[in-house]
Length: 261
Image 1: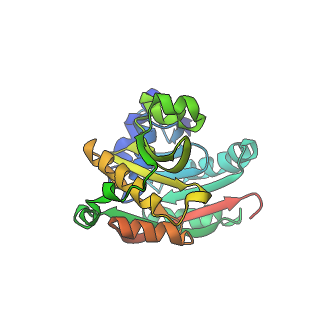
Image 2: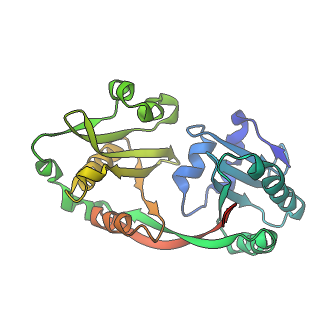
Image 3: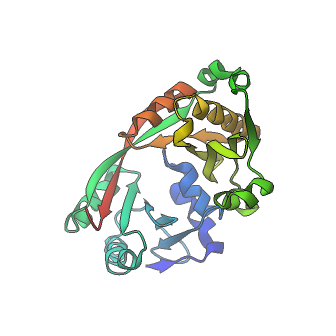
């Protein structure tokens, strides 16, 4: 098992070209837009890759039959990576039944469980029902594209205006207060992964829908596909996705391990 330098990440792109979910997340790391780590079975000519996105979300791809690499990466995770991690949690996605059969065996002794993540696809025709979203901005609220000036006032926006991340976002403001924020948590593979938040005092006013509409239009103007995924228990997120024109495709299985599980 060897770890790639960031300037070598592109070499494993082909191992993830056929994935059907988490495209923005995986390729944001490969393209250098998001921080992450990638481990492979050999350099050059990797046939198996293990990708870590900003700590907790992990992905494995390529040839599942490399048992030496499979054992090495699992040992690394539980003997080195997780003991030293600030957040002792692992969410691991695989993209084939063959991989899942391998991981079922490898992770069993550690007590990992299987969970599901809802995967949606964007339907532009359904989104057209919101063509008049600008008319629904309440009086006293202002819609803004997140820029350097806003990032100076709100430190959480600094990674969004960092050009190297290719991230972007919009917010609805009431005077100087952030009421609703919709951002690309990552950009990769020509997709933008949506993250949305509404301040508690401004909920149940339709502001999340307006912010999301603005974000989706901005995404499309950048020639990107907006992407939505969430955990099944996030009922409000599921409902908002469908309202905006996202169509539920399937539930992607993932392995969850946490220190306090």
